Length: 105
Ligand SMILES: [Zn+2]
Image 1 (spheres, rainbow, N blue to C red):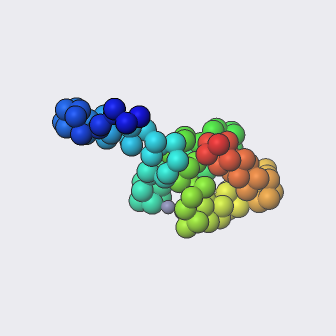
Image 2: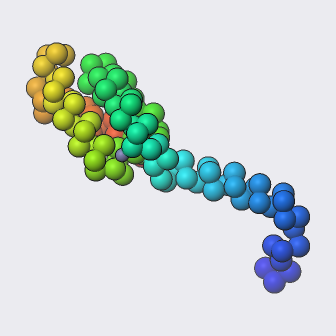
Image 3: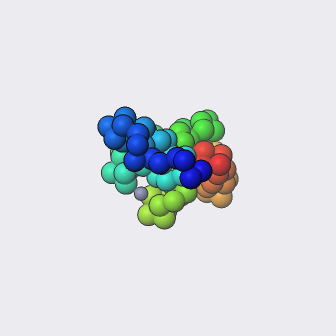
């Protein structure tokens, strides 16, 4: 460990590596979908989940798991459209919650 000095590495290459590394970590652990992006897609995504059990994309699921505002929005949407697909609001929300958990896991 004592021989390793990160400052000896080429600074440009190092920065690029760090950048990619951080970006990858961010995808795994943090929401990187903005609330605006989320809001734009939430209608069709929630409908896909409720109607056909289509899995959420990872960023979408992570965002819903981490963002109470968008989560709330998605839940009310699921409740709202449940009837259209012969589901009770509870069933629709349960599907949504399962999809969020699946995507964020
Ligand atoms: Zn949000």
